Image 1 (tube, rainbow, N blue to C red):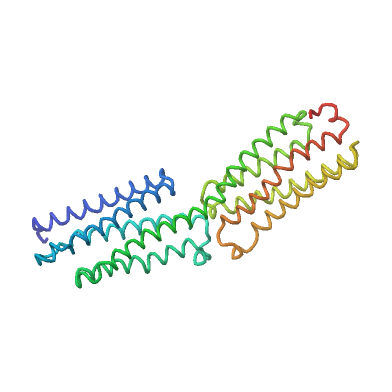
Image 2: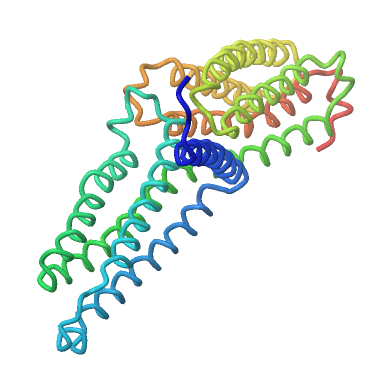
Length: 335
């Protein structure tokens, strides 16, 4: 049995503490990530990156000041190296967060064509590596590389800002559709219920409300953020939507054919019904297509939600048309 020296025991204990500390620190970072909105995190991180750049500039100016050059004293590069490393590590952290968010909505096969991921790759492979290289050259060669380092560190923040804009554009378009869709869906359900008879015997209303419920499920899966994980659920719900809109169209045409509405009103209602069927088919077609036609799932959801909003906007008119066309419902319809 080999005896362990005091130094080896201390080193072993330090390694254990280091692993435990790293694990807890990672857990803390993940917890903060869960409760911090991505856009807010980007704003704060880029603000700190800007502070790093300003500090780099101040250190360079101080080190190459006239008084320092005159005294020919040794320059202290520790602060410069530490600040440049802080800027680079902070930027890598931002890139990792953005990449993780994009992987939730972009299929792995098409990440290479994603413009946001392209900006991340360029910033990591070229700008950050060149910044570190220039920092090392400043230490070795001195003043000739000072301005180049200041410019390159400024480029890091500039590219981060452009990356933030590109990321926001890629996400907010779908978010805006989702928020407006929820409002429209709630308004539609309220109007349907306001003009309804007993739901148990009112087939058009049953179908219309079922369509609203299906669309809400689709949208809730979009809003959860992980599009790829929930894609099979979305496709299944869109198949159900396709079946329900077909049933509604059949029901509408049957009521109008046997009802007592004017020819003009009938034509308009059947046109609306046809549009709903067309939109639901379009949504399903989009979802079932080869995803190579789309840069990311987010763009597909925008297309699907656009069709869903069209469906929702026409449902109240169709239901009113059903009420007008049926002699049993006409007397209770409230304009």
